[in-house]
Image (cartoon, rainbow, N blue to C red; front, side, top):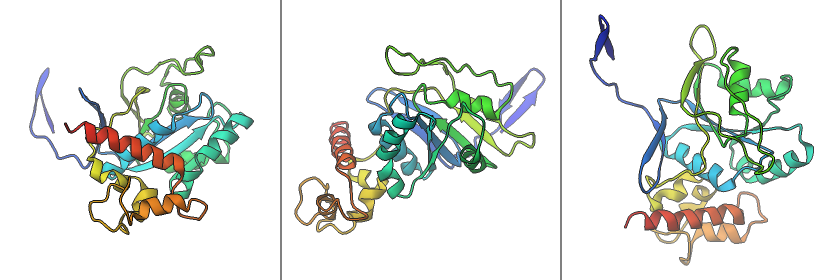
Length: 259
């Protein structure tokens, strides 16, 4: 709460946050935004997105109780999009809202479905460079003049064009807001307790309560329901080998970070 005083002012009080979306590595913490209704993770069929980075962003959102949305851009690139859409199958099976879009083209029902989900909410737009975050802002905020940049064909990755986090009101009534964030290469989760990690991964969490031991790490223990679900991967509601790999590697990383 800010009280103006001529050309200066004073902070009267600080209100409590209801959530904070952030990442943390071994050295520093990067706070993206607070008091969010949802996080839109925007990825693209090309350049190929990192499954590991997607999983990390989703875990960070789950840990703060923030609703995540996933949008896969460049649906007009038929073959790359088909591959990427298949890679996202485990996330659709988990119940995440995954939307196909082509943001550089004229809006159709697919893009409108995304725009409708943004209405009357404060949304952080997160994703790697080149995924189309700036294009989305330009579509929804005429005159925002966000640099879009062209893809680096040599590296098959996006050029970094957003350098600061910016709040945009979408409507004149100021009920709908987008927060544009810089692209990231790494997404540290050192603020997550390794023993709670499975709780923030819905496919693992669905089985974690059935384990024989209350402190099961889901890595080697007998009577582990998570491992059993992995071994019966062909059945509905089970865990993919790729998702379990991400869990195991993250568990090791977060366990080491405590010492």
